[in-house]
Length: 231
Image 1: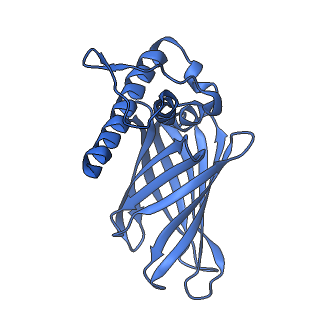
Image 2: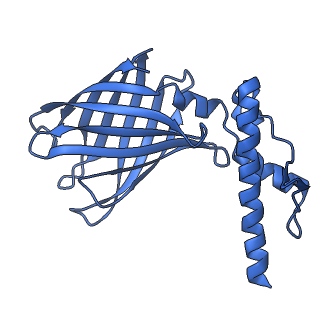
């Protein structure tokens, strides 16, 4: 039956992912080879489930299963994101529109490694003048299939989830993110640009740019200077 075949495929992918995670965790305790190059990362060998070799769904090849495993294996780009694990204190400057007066505040960002090193989790909190307490939660990773950095953000001042992709500079010090969100004023999707610069072992800056919903002109919305206080 079609449903049975579909469920079998999902189960195979799930098992492949679980095997990749298990094998990767073991390998990372003994070698760093898996973080040398995402494009040439060592693919884990086929594993077993419950003491038996995993059966392949109809039409699948061993290469198909290996591709699923490779997709779930962290590499050097994941390791790059996890270099920021720690607690960061930030000094924030915010502008509500082009040419507007700046507003200053402070924030704290806590970055942790989650899902066995597959993603970085960022929890940020602070207070914005006139807006009250601000809390946001973000997850960032590197999609081995698309070869793109990916990120999702949500906060306590909105009801949507902001989705983005990122590109890393050749020197590894600047990440440029492009996020998509629904503008509440224009009632349609809009984009936001974020430039994340590493300025030292324990220092980094965020700059956020977006379009003014009235004039359509891009302006600098926010800048945060972060200092890591502990790892």
